[in-house]
Every structure is written in structure tokens, then in C-alpha cells.
Image (cartoon, rainbow, N blue to C red; front, side, top):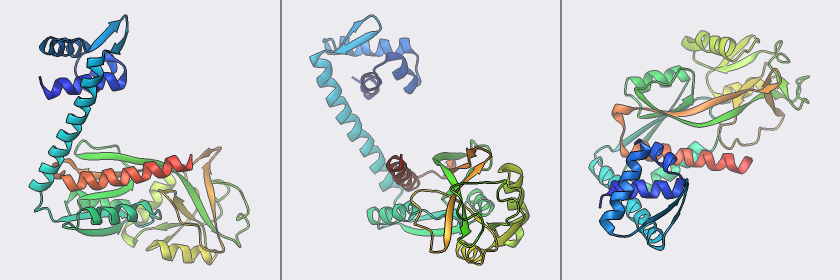
Amino acid sequence: MLLRQMKYFTAIVESGSFTEAAEQCYISQSAISQQIKSLELELGVELIRRKNRRFTLTTAGEYFYRQSRMILNETEEMRRETIRIGQADESWLRIGYLKNYNGQELQIAVAGFSKQYPEISIEIVAGTHEELYDLIRHKDLDVIVSDQRRAFSDDYENKILLECPCFAELSGNHPLSGRERLTLADLKRTPCILIAPINQREEEANYYRGTLGFDSSFLYAENLEEGRLMVLGNRGFLPLEEVGTLPPPIPTIQRIPLYRGDKPLRRKICVFWLKECTNYYIEEFAAMLHGLMTKQKRQTI
């Protein structure tokens, strides 16, 4: 009996389909069926009772499924722990995130990871999309949380955390601050405040204008705090993505859903790392952050 056969069997039971299980396991349907037949011959009992395109489990099949799931879970845990121990000399996790990130899940993930793996020192860097991209491709960061602006590269692990709605933060003194929603056309005459260093301002403006469709003039801030002070001074609006749980806006600032035409403006936020640099801790942190983002998304639906 092989672990692979247990994997095939549990995939069939959990998907309820030989076809779907074969796709999940990257083999043909005839091959997965043959593996189950071989397993039943080896055990000398029937595990699956087939009828046309449907099947049910025998009593022996139900027992075998429960035990297989337990063994596979234990095997996966053993694999991951072995990798973790073997990579114990990887004592740093260097995380990059967008300067205008305003959610709470990243902080929660960092705190949870640090508690679970106290032997790992964490370094955190904030930057623009382009700054983070340069740092990750030169291996100066291990993992980054950023928006998607390029086609996914095969050199990276590209995990979408969520597709999040966008907002405009406006001073309560702005004439449009009482709106329930704002379109890019509504804000055409209001400057857009971007978080970008001097050497990346033109590139950032080109992205917002050419890709996202902003038609405003642009002002610039070095960080989120400076951008919000500009909003408080009624100098323009600050575009912001709902990445996870956003804290409420500070007094006298209105946060209003942002639309492009009649559709909400949305952006993909992802976690990226170089495939050749993959290790246990990067995968654990990415999984932890994804779990927190997914949980938050379910709670808001």
C-alpha cells in the first residue's frame, strides 16, 4: 500500500468525483481508477461501491478514508517540521509591504508568526510597488505584500490575497465629502495624493493615469501620515485600498467608495517571493496572512 494511493482515495471521497480527483492529482481518470482497483485487490476488500457515474463507500471504505486522512495529515506535518528544522539556520524573515497599506491583518500576522517562531528575527520594510519589486528581485527581501501591476512571473510564487475595493479619503470640508460614492470623473478637478518618493513619482502617476484611469492632477507625499495631513488641509484626495480590516478614518476625514464609471474600482493585493528562495518560514507567513485576509473577507460578506 502506498501513500499515493491513500492520497488518490481521499481525493475521490472529498471531491465526490473520480474526474475531479484525477485533475487535482494531475493524473488521468483511468489511472486513478486503476490505482483504486489495485488498492482494493491488495486489501482484499471493496472500498467503493460503484453505480453508473455515482459511488458510495462501503463500511471498510469509510474506515479506510478516516485512517488515510489522519495518516496523510500526520505525514504532511512531519514533512513540514522536517523542512523547518533543516532550515533553522534561516534565522531572518525580511518582509516588505506597501507604504500606503492601512489594514490590520499584516500586523496581526507578524505578531502571530513571531510568537509561533520566536527563533526567527523579523525585518520589516515599507516601500512603493517599484521599490519592493527591486528589493525582492535582488534578494534583499524574502517576501513582499504588494499590488499586482505586472503579469505574474514564473520566477515567483504569486499568491492573490484578495481583490479589494478602493476608497477616496477626503476632507470633511470638501464639497464632495457628503457623497455615498465617488467616481473618478467626480474627482477630475480634485488633486490625487500619491505616496511616492521623488524618483518614482512620474512612474506612479503614469500607472494611476494610464492603468487605473485617474484623470486628476497629482500631488505627492512620502508616507501615509503625510498624505493624510494633506487631506486634512483639503489639498486633495487620497486613494486607499481596503486591504483587510481598515481602522476607521480619523475625525474630519471622509472615506468614500471609489468607482470607475458605474463599477467599483478594485485592485489585487498579493504576496510574492522568489521560487528559488522558497523556505518553510516564507510559506508559513504567507499562509498565515492569507488565512487572516480570507477570514476578514468572510466576515464582511
